[in-house]
Length: 204
Image 1 (cartoon, rainbow, N blue to C red):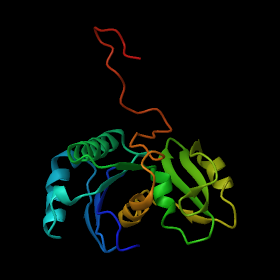
Image 2: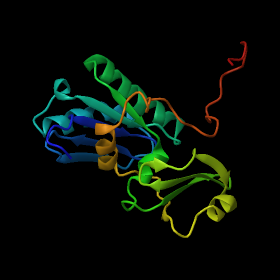
Image 3: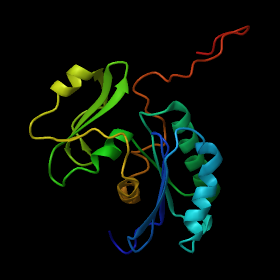
C-alpha cells in the first residue's frame, strides 16, 4: 500500500456482524467488529466515532468511504449504505460500493482462481467465480445449492463464509474507481421486504 493511500473507512452490515475498518495513509489499519444479527442502526455511528477517536482522527480526516453492497440482509444493507452515503455526502468525498461476493473473493490467494459460494437458504446459493481475488469471470448468480457446488472448479480456492475481511475491503476501495463501483444494493434475489398494499395502491 503506498504511503499516500487515502484515509478510508469501510463498512459492512450485509451479514450478522457490524464490521468497520479504518485504513490510514501509511497503510496500517484498525478494525471494529460486533457480532450482531440486528441493531446495526443503533450502534454504527457510535462505533465509527470510537474507531476514529482511538486513532486520533475525526470525520473531517476521512478521504474515502467503502461499503459492501450485498447480496445480504435487506435491512442490514440499507443501514450500511445509508451511513456510507450520508458521511460521504457530508464530507464531499467518494464512496465505493463493493459487492459482497467480490469482497469475499479478496480473501483468496493471489494469482489463484477463487469460487465464492454463500448459502442463500431455501436450497439456493449465491455463486461467483473469479480468475483472481477481486477479478470476476462473470456476474454473481443465484443457483440451486446443487448447481452451485457443481460449478466449483477443482482449480478454485473455495470460499463459503458469509463474513468478509473488512480490511481487504478497505484496501480494495482505496484504489478502486468510485464510478465503476456505485454504492447501490446488489440483491440478486428480490428483497424480502415487500411493499405495503393494504388500503393503498401497490408501489411498483
